[in-house]
Image (cartoon, rainbow, N blue to C red; front, side, top):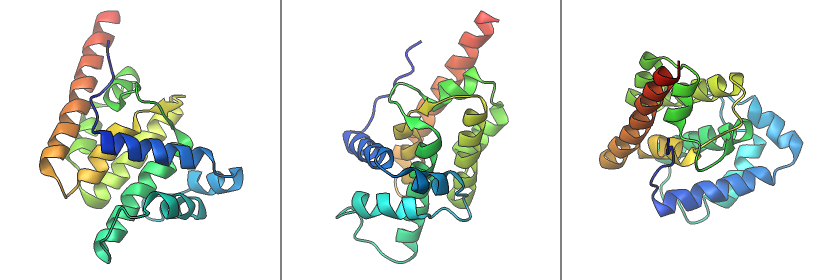
Length: 175
């Protein structure tokens, strides 16, 4: 099964840069990032990555920038636990490991703080299943499109759903 995704070049570039920055962090900063939660997402490691990643990216301030930082914290903190690999589609991995349909729908329909909670749950689940990597571009599109770009969000949801249900179908045939 081909579980790679078409990606927006700009998002791919940002995720690749975030991954490069995360890989370059000292181990003590990564340890702190592994303990981050949706309610307390920012760590020294996150701020180190954010300082480089956000250069000229976000001219907004106030609540919007805080929301954006929380979304990026979910991405970069997640990268410490699950590395970025472009071919490891999140929907496919969730199907492979038996993540419930209800939880997938919860992930895809959630917004705001609920979406952050759902992403952290997905990362926890995949780590518990001994996965080592995921396509963070897919997760980023889901996180960063909320609530700004509904078309982009719909496309991200469709890709994850497609991979999930194709993965379930493949798994059922193998069983």
